[in-house]
Structures are given as structure tokens and as C-alpha cells.
Image (cartoon, rainbow, N blue to C red; front, side, top):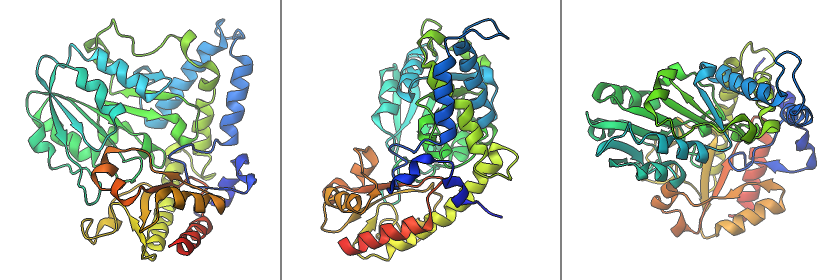
Length: 391
């Protein structure tokens, strides 16, 4: 038996309100198991643990760290937790001052938002920029052979674009960096891990970031280092992780339950990795159905897929199930309102450097869709019917 989406829908009690949620990139639905875990953690975090004789909040922190390690194949001692990715990025950038020495090379990507690139611009480095393909939105790996050299100390990129769904060939880029330098590679894997399994050994990146909230978990982020030998190379006067007393204890209690929920997406799976692979296979077919359905509407332009600039093979590129589209002659706000009137929840695409470079603003804005573990073919058909009436 394949991925049982009807069963998965039963894991989300919020789905009984009559709305169709296609906005997982914005605010994912929270599974019942995560919600109950957070509620229990808030009730107990101030109590004393009988086994450790310390506040349960401290145990919750370590349990969350171990859960992230299980999910990514990492060692718990390499996992740093924080309230947001923005907080962790700023802390890391401040701590890299001694590692990225005067005029050392730093390679950033113009496909990424300011929250990921701006903190590193404060380093005393020499900056180079990787450019995405403006036809498809993909970040080509070949350019890193020219961008990375012996002086490079840091490479920063995202594993998947949060609005277009295009997947970056992280493994190939890391291989190029290893061949040409001793640089650290930082990967924001949030949009990728929301849909696929991740083992750090697959990429061999030095630092990987996750926002657990985008997976339907609590608003906690994690930064995972390749090994603990990296910590002494950072400025120790800049703490990467807040003390346990300053972290959101109750939310931390939902992290282990998130991992249990992910494993339970496929009741026959023996691990989180197997369950995520099962969901990814289901999503591959669902995304193909979504693309084919929207391509059948002449007025709809799928950003990075439709048009001559994207090429004939754009629809077959590696993607997670997110996409952005425009409707010819109809402003994005009007499209959004029509969809909401039919109880379809999407988003008007937020400001994004890649979408701007691809001309979305000139088209009157765009709509972004993010599928979820519980999304169905029927919901795609419902979306298509409403867009057909609008176009």
C-alpha cells in the first residue's frame, strides 16, 4: 500500500473547518501530536525531574536536541537550537569574525533572501555572488568552479527555493567547494526538509539549518554542525545558543513529537527517513498533476516553468511541491480574493529577490502554493476549476 493521504489527514484536527489549505510555505497546519506535546510541555516544564533532579525544561531542551539529531542523522552534541533561523544566522555571522579573516572569500547566492545573506555582509571578506537561472529559478552548480578558490572561507546557499520549489544541487556544489578550498558550506535546508528526508552525510555540508515550524512543528530552529571540532574555531565570546532559561521551554517539548509525527506519516515505515521517502513519492505525482493542470489554463503562467525562457524541460526539473504563478491580466490580489471566496487558502507571493529578477512584479504580482502532507488530487482539481473561471 502506498502513502495513505486519507489516514494522514486524520492526524490534523484543524482540517475539519471547510477550508482547503495550500499555504504550507506560509503557516503550516500543526498536527495534533505536536499540539498535544507542546501543551503537555507547558504544563510540566517548571517541575523537577525525578531522574535528573533538575527542571524538566532542561530535559526538554536535550530531548529536542536529540530529536533533531535523529531526524538528520547527526550527533546531538552538534545541534544548536534557537528561536528562529534569523537569530542563529546572526549569531553565526558574529562568531565567524576570526575564521573569515581579512578579505577572505565569501560566496553568497542572489536567490536567497536578505535574512540569509545580509548578516554575512558584515564580515571583513571579499564577496562573490552565485546567480540563479532567471528562466527556471535553479541555482546552477557549474558556476561555483569559478566563484570558489583557495581564498574562499564560507559558502552560503539554500537547498530549495521557498516559493518556486526548485531544488539546488547541494551535493555537487559541496564537492566543488571541497576540491577548490577549505571553506565551510552553510545550507538552509528548511524548504527541502519540509518534504524530503535528510541525512547530513548525503550532502557533507559543514552547517545545515532547519526551521521546524515550516514542517508543522513548534517555532524552533536548529543549526547542525558537521562535528564538534568546528566550535573552537568560532568566537567564543558570541554564544550560538541561548541558555536554557531563555529558550521557549514549552515549544521545545513539541520537537520530539514532531519527529514521531513524521515517522507516523507512513504507518509501515520503520524510520523517519522511510516515511519521508514515501511522502516524497506521493508528492512527486501530486506536483506533476498540479503542473499539468495549471499548464492547461492558457492565462496561467507558472514562474520558472512556463514560457520560452524556462525551456521545454523546466517542468521536469527537481522540485519540492511548491510553485508560484501569475494570471494574465489579473492582479495577484484579485486572484487571491477569488480563491479565498472559494475557501482555497494560498498567498500573494511575498517580496523575494529571485521573483523580482524574474519579472513577477511587472506582471502584477503572483500567487504561491505550498502543498502539505495532507494535500490531495481533489484539492488540485478544485484550485484548477476556480482559476479556469477567473481566467
